[in-house]
Length: 289
Image (cartoon, rainbow, N blue to C red):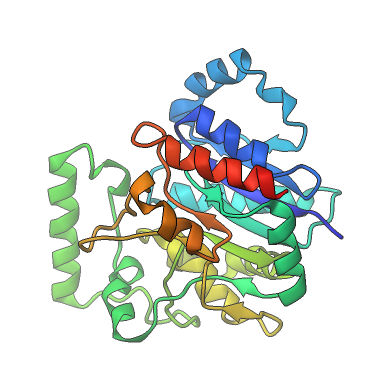
């Protein structure tokens, strides 16, 4: 049975990341890790003092500054995927997770389920809800990296978007792909990942100047793959409340709902908010191995 590749984007909570990699059993998986460049010094201090190199199945790629929702995040994902595809080790599946995810079952069970069903688990927004996200790619999105830290940049971007709406800009007018959007995190077969990576350069211009394009390009490209076996489910337990764009941090009072899920992974956990819920899940996973 071939191993699975786990691609992780991390930027905080190094002990939590350490534990995550610990339970991603090296017998069944290799980890491909990206640390946000803004936090690299902090990570290096932790890694040195906690013998992070003991994880023999971890491959760290070159660190870049990541602006969540910006094009930099999409580029880091592609860099991780290319690293996986270029390795001599041949994998059967690739899972994309964040450093604040945690598995809901042992890797042996995740591997067995994937190999048995052979599906590409990737979430899609369907129905009328999809139309509200088209603006992510339809308009030129500028100053994405600075809108959270500069009111001037935020207002400038807002005014520029309004102008584009008035004059009828549509960057997708000549895009041969159907617009799709959904969950960023996924668990797909290696041949489907290769298709996405190989096809991406043809359509890069439609994603490069968007916002949160990392939640669109995988869906839009894989939808055109003749051999794809897409299941509209990311196999992630995640809770969104009150129309928030960010998932709710999982806590002990949600433990029963979390563990009742059939997901591969849950998110997001934050040890600074509630460490115990993650430790309880870790113990259960360890006992089930």
